[in-house]
Image 1 (cartoon, helix red, strand yellow):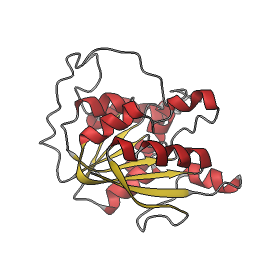
Image 2 (cartoon, one colour; image 1 turned 90 degrees about the vertical axis):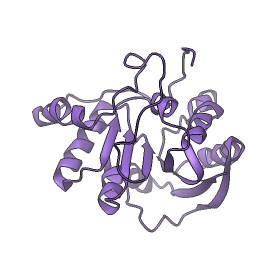
Image 3 (tube, one colour; image 1 turned 45 degrees about the horizontal axis):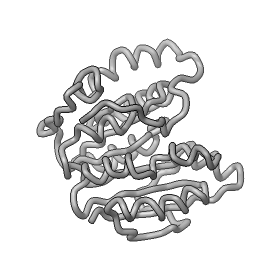
Length: 226
């Protein structure tokens, strides 16, 4: 696949200075969870990953933030391997603390751009994917940076099996609009939503809690890969 410049669909990758224990987890625990052969430095030829050693169905969370949902789902579904992609270092550090506290082991991580991971996953390997409270890029001129645009959706569709489920949660009305416009043409059928009723196994993330505090309503959408 040719090299190219991508518009980032995320903002900064670092926040406040990390605490010593967070740095220890990033240095000690994260390398044991990280999928190898994903970055362009490790895999310039973009060879397909061998995921045969990962147990059970594969689920992907795109941008897992502080990891509340990722850890919750890993604990609720021990027979599934959850893969999380997240470029924000402080969020990864928070996630590692939650993962360690819960003691779950069925999680793997790509600490970077989800598109790099989607490029090298085997076609049709994902049975479920989650896009929870993605960066809204509210200014109209930035809407092309949203994940729900043709390029990242094409990569996601390629990696998802026929019949696989895609869940999207957002508190931004215009993100709902764009999701409904862009996701079906990428190869998905709308199955449920938009609705204010969350999935039965949903857990509230810090982003959802913030949205509710600030008076914005959650919207949940479920799509099925054709």
